[in-house]
Image (cartoon, rainbow over all chains, first blue to last red; front, side, top):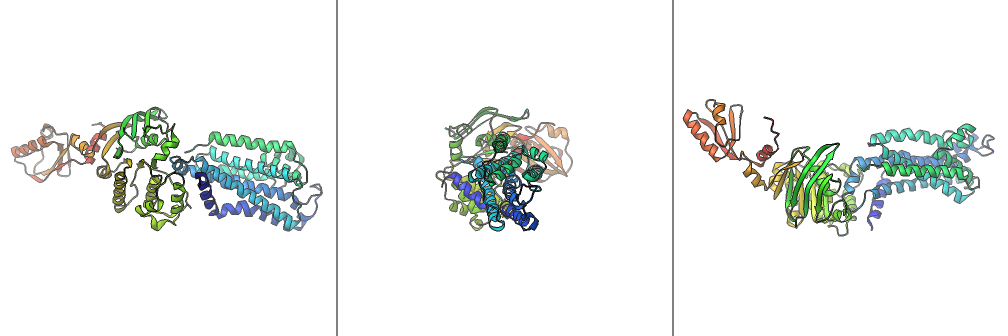
Length: 246
Length: 301
């Protein structure tokens, strides 16, 4: 077994021992969708949403919520904790680079987020007759870009904060606006026009639009995918540039 | 050829030199101690050896390799126990040992290591539930798990009870006897005296002395300690005039003089001259403690 596989395996085991993280990433988004779907009015077509039902719009929202929970809520304190508690330092005295530990955590959080997203899509389809995404590859691209920017945002938060405590504070400051732009309170598609134009400049606002367009069967607008990808690129660069190893 | 060579090492933080021109060489198969007061630069020095810090000046070689440039090779032959470093809370002892042995091409048998460190009962325990001493023993096991040629142990027995400390010392001697070179950072004199073949005493970022423990004691100025309770007070001027007397101090009724054999004779004749009785007279050799204090005291008085 190679060293990186051993690290990934061991971090996977640790990840399964964090029931709260798993709950927020994998269980909570489909749960939210279920609650929304159980409200009869949200299962009726809405004029404001161009004939779509509220529950339809909440599938991409739940998908993004899984990304945000993984990337911004649970990932950053783990990365900062590994730094603060000298776990990265200990690993840098071995032949294995400590970056493999961070990479393992990012990969596992990404995988859990995709798991939560798929579960939300499945619940939408099975419980509330929400059609599966019409443009599958477009949906997959938007989903992966969304996941990437969430994880990159979390890594960047950990990079610019000196302590785990600061990471948690900055993480929650970022967390709520990101949930808003993803449409957790009001789906982006039913936001007032001006607000919609604004949130489209944020990674999850753009991703929400891209996911909804792919869900409806078209290839997402290049502008939405571009905004999400640009955020991901900038945040990855920032995290790599500013991450301190101790 | 020495297995660790440090030449003219310098390291400053924010303009303040922490390590200032430190040089020493560790021979293969010895236990080499780095002794010094807190903040003397001990840890920074070994961090340069471990490749965790980049020296501002000077060279460091481990088995002829540069710990920074030849990182990969150095980490394979150098085991490290860090002073302040933890593991994941929920990782069990067994998982930690298995994980770290997967990092090395030819690791030591972790079961045997766990046995030698008294961890076999704790294999299923999570790191967060271990006691301070158990954590420390796990860190020692992780330092040895790659079957290293050199092991650096920083504050080896901090947090261990006296029994566990003795056991750990025994283990370190066995490790040395199996051919591994040990670089030990400590501030416990007893530990240094018991374990180290040679010692470098570091003070304010410089090597204040480099010798065997016995040599350090022998060469310290106050190598012989005379202590007694005089029946009448002695005059300071007369005490200061004693030959080869290094220091004297009064505490309660007791007078303690650091000097040499010549001082002992002079004290005896001084007492006889004034017809003073010396109650509870003790003449002892200085300990490493005394030598250390003398070497590291700041000469303010």
